[in-house]
Amino acid sequence: MTSPRLTAATALLAALGLAACSDGGGGATAATPASGITSAATSAATEPASPSDAFPTAAADLPTRAADGTVYPGETWEHVRPRALGFSSRRMEAIAHDARPSKSTCLLVARKGKVVGEWNWGGVEPETPREVFSVTKSITSTLVGMAQADGDLDIDDPAKRYIEEWRGTKSRAVTIRDILSNVSGRFWDIGTDYGDLPQAEDRTQFAIDLDQLYPPGKVWTYNNAAIQTLDRVVSTATGQETRAFAAERLFGPLGMTHTQMTADPAGNTNAFFGTQTTCEDLARFGYLFLRDGRWGDDQVVPRSWVKAAVGRSSQDHNAAYGLLWWLNRRGPIIGPLATDAPGQPTPPVGQTMPGLPANAFTAQGLGGQMVLVDPRSETVVVRIGQFQASPDDAYTGNDAARFITEALVRP
Image 1 (tube, rainbow, N blue to C red):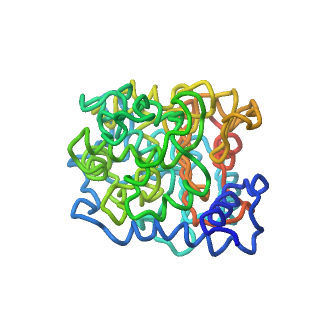
Image 2 (cartoon, rainbow, N blue to C red):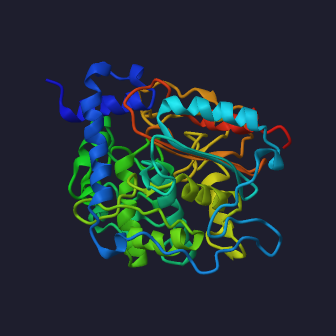
């Protein structure tokens, strides 16, 4: 009999378009595990653990323009015709039409602080928050950067300073930077990361209690459990629940009033998945990074953090990865269910979105959740869709990039 956690992992492989790499069953068995995987996110969204789980209140007087003339969305995004900012309406509509088969529920394109295209499907209202899975990781990374700017932590600190269970163990040398770069060496296998972890009552403690598999810095692995331990790091360092810190310091100041991080049944913040949000709110998050961490005349996130997170590869193993963000740098590329551990194939060399400049970057989540930022064209593309355990019609960064490579006719 196939174990539930391995069958669930097979469904995830399919959803990421990597089913051919697994030894699991075919599409007929994938549907049930898929619903089991997403049930953890559904529970997190419908069972708030404390008053801090309320949606944030927007900061007063949200800016619409900075002192230097840079445009910001204010309380609501300004919508303009595509041609006003250099896009072909006909091409944009065709590209948006192609996104529908992937079960997209919303799609948004913004340039220079204004929305040039927005589509909503499936009867989902634009202001209805939806699960964006691992896009959460990029939010968690940002919170770590903000905590560092406050002087509450340093990413080169050993994580054991905030995770006492790791003191005197093989994990004592793991730094916060190692975790952010996915080179922590913490235990990982598909069944644990995509089966046991989401189903755990106390996900943070479950993740902390796993073993050390490799010395830090030696192996790159997309490790959900290791990233979940950042909940303990942030909450201990700041003295706030991670999701409360996010609402107060990030979502509120940006006007992301339909966005919240969620909690596990034990009340810990989900740091590797679980964020509920909308296309318009995620576009604000992407635009913050497009503007080097500034919102109006306020430096919400340090420019130095933006550069560290998305401006260069965070390690030598995977050129496509920064600090919990996906990059477009050329070099060895390791996907989310691969690793360069001993005995694994040598990673291919390439670029994730070859049609875009090397400094483009994305926050991505299971099921094709997408925030694409292209600094050169000052464009942000956001897509949210329903989870589907099938590689057919999967939405990718290259699909989002088409708005820039095919529809932007006057850069």
